[in-house]
Image (cartoon, rainbow, N blue to C red; front, side, top):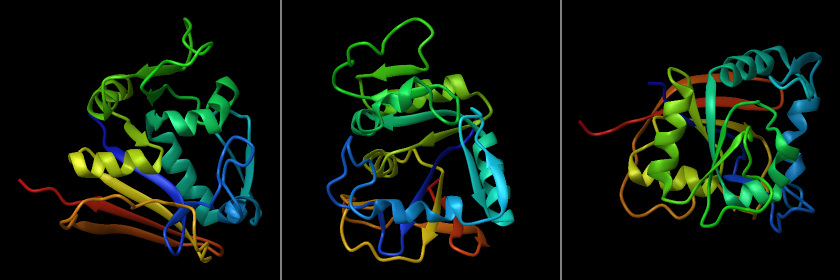
Length: 206
């Protein structure tokens, strides 16, 4: 069974989106600044669905290809799903998506849909995603779910793409964690011109 991992772009002060994010402004105020590195290089990277092409540095292209090709399923939250309008029916990574929610939204639950709506908790969402992903990784794709998975001991790896900017406010990746240490071991760091890619293993007690 593959790893449960998270991979999000983050400002140096810990935000993955600016304030007042929503369907009309998915990344919040000034949040698009976090993704300038997707268009600042000279190397083409085409996402697995074929629907997007980014212009990144060679270093970033290599790590994006490695990371995205290793993902077999994604777990995300209902708020992210709503903000993106279900990615128009197809996620850029073109893998099954498990959406943690209290209620199943109208119009999305149909035969052949890439979305599975999970109403019985994050443990169930991760377990179902792992069954589908097999030997590939399960990516956890929302700040609140990263926090829940860390507290539940479900997360094996954290990857952050750190952008040299201070947003000052917004959606913080490591907010709402309870007291006590969560130990991490840095396993990889790749410096690119406009972003630093850092990977950590979550240290778990035997």
